[in-house]
Image (tube, rainbow, N blue to C red; front, side, top):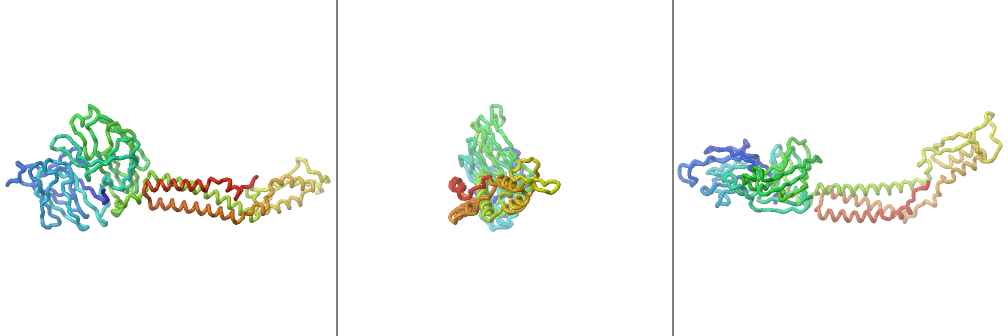
Length: 487
């Protein structure tokens, strides 16, 4: 499993110096970047005297280097290697029985720093791309990072297969069979399967193996930062690659985006339809904008949370927060009543008290019966003490009006403090529920910060939902502990 930060360098980079016999480029879509380099062949390929070989020098900063491309055909099976001007040694090409596309050289582990590798005695071998293993201090800004399909930073959803077999390409000598990057791929034929990948960079590319040997179609939605791009790939009798017998093509660019804004991005890939043609992922690439440590891709999978699972955790936290606010509101109202606050004026902005309008001569009306005269005005009282409101109204109205006002406000009188005084036992229950919800919210926030295995996370969410049901199912109990005023 790949757990290292890797830099991919195309064969056309200025950091690769070709010498010796003339090198030429082949342009084919099967190559990474669309081209590869190889030294022009001389007659023979048998190591006899007079054959001029190609040479290659590559300078890099890191801890290791590997080269990918076609191995030679039967004949020369060794390359001569020297690192940092040291003693040279022979490196054998893998799969000596036939020409194969694969990683044909891997350096030993080196101390981090600047290095130069020199390869000589090269003939009938192609260079597609070079991969450098970065160290903690390797400059990454502007470099292209390659991420293997088996890297833990890629989160797979659904049933995916893992394939380590050779891919069959067309029978020509230029396009032999071979192995994918790091010798394996993830593949799926199931609709609804998906994957997610987070990165910080200014470009993204999705590469895999595409099967041109069967008829069918494949539909995928690529979602980059909530911007969806649906793409469909189809193979029929008139498809040029099928007619040419291409078979399975490596380095197939399923999707790419450049000129992204600097910052963090999230790419999700969803398979919406697969008819005979599988989606086969080999690797991802992105252009780095900063210099993060390699630990960003080497952390174990159990410390990361899938982006597709984060909305679930967020919704649970939101529900718990709502219930916490409701309980705190009930406690607030109970304390207001306990302290003798004017709960009528907290619900109504003003207390409307009615008094009879005096006559022009200032005399009070003689009748003591409750007045039914519509010639009334309303006076607004804004006192925090309800008893003062009643006293002020009684001081300026007739005894009949006093009875009328008292009758009107009888239903608005606050309950006695003795009726609403919470017992210590009830108060303790409310405080325990608040503490329980605060503990659950703190645990969910810790899950978001530290992450968790997807199975453990789903089990934990189920436990939190059950716990939330226990805390909120006894609504009648809450009403008993903290009843709302009845207006």
